[in-house]
Length: 237
Image (tube, rainbow, N blue to C red; front, side, top):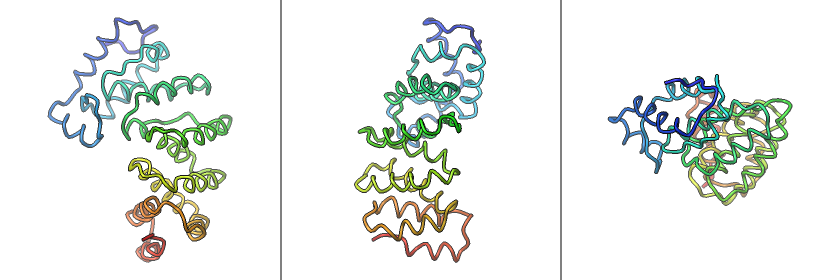
């Protein structure tokens, strides 16, 4: 199938779906569906294959592809997410991302986003993160944290991470807690003294997030056995 089209038309919708099905692995469908915890149809296409398809589409008029809004299964939604991340204009990218928020429905739809964050637009992404954190949809809140995760190597982001964690005191959604714990564990790795001091200084943090953070740190190879034992003191009962 030609993927680098100069223009995607409505009649291409069914052709693309059949093309995607040709890469499906029926024997892995149920397993993939359980791992993703998805309510959508899942074709079990390898992620590497999906990325290759997305890259091929972006070589053509990919905005016209996005405009078709092909959301028939997990993979077609994933393609939309992968492709919108190629849009360099922040406002245009945001308009497509806003559509995506309504159709992403599992953790992988969030985690596959490689957002086009640059020095010029990082403030815009930070504002998005604050906005998404207040959303009633759990996967949008997960995306709020994923945005910061993708900016985690910038030390200026650290206080914002702490603010987010504090605001999630009453969070109880599993996939939000998992991402928050993962993000906080990365902060322990990158900014150990500051992050451990944060954990010591606040008595009313979300216990599940803190304990997930400590668990992720103890599972990491980036800590010595002695450091892993020391981290146990930060677990909350």
